[in-house]
Image (cartoon, rainbow, N blue to C red; front, side):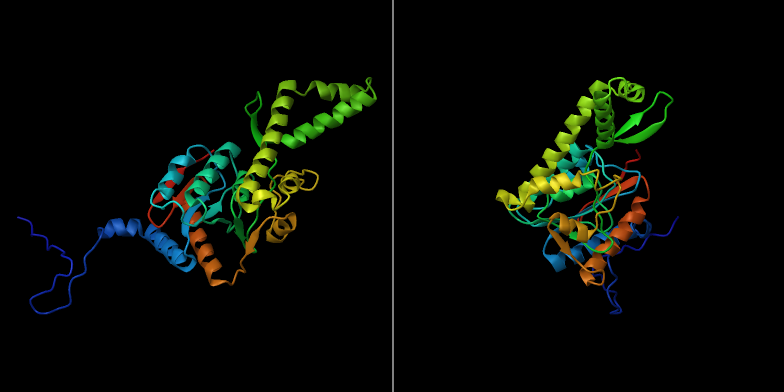
Length: 309
């Protein structure tokens, strides 16, 4: 017969008067496998104690994207937050679906209600991530933080199976340039050949996407950051979509430039203890996310999504 295991009882004291045997919430192997998650969640609690705000996190690898399925995971993070509590979202993303971004930021804004809602950008929140940041009361940034242009991009697949990312505004700019050249000289063979390569339906679709991105940016800016006409949301949205100013979709917009554009940025120097805590948390989560995973985390919930695109 095997030996009878010794039970571990909370606050148990031996007959000899030795100190009590500590209770264990989890088995040793489980605790070892999940130790880093516990450390991250403890750090989230510590940060919440310092700020008084509820902190939720969405950190994705470089091969991930904001998409509709993120609603499921974000709902879990908001599940135990009472409506009307100030909320901070630590966000790291290369971008994604702007319609999904609108829904996600709307969910957080509704949960915060009249309380403050901030987005903390430790590293980068590009494209649709920048759109999400526009829907907050303010964006917390430091020297390592960056936003990006919000001109829409589309993934296209050629007949040979090659997949590439197309900048919608660049496509429309090229169409406008060749159309203008053809209007100036209807016999221009180069302009004729190039205009014939453009798909009229695609041109119409892309024009609609540009209008959608601009109107969404203005709507998000007016919701919290500049309510009741307190800022020029049209000018800010226009600058963020200006492909003449931002020649690549991945171009960096640091905190100084973000402030120059008129965005409300709460700058924190790298040596600030609170920023160091944010950065430590981000490092833990980013290493966990690797390239194809997204980490959705609060002090209560921790979810890891396989999101390779």
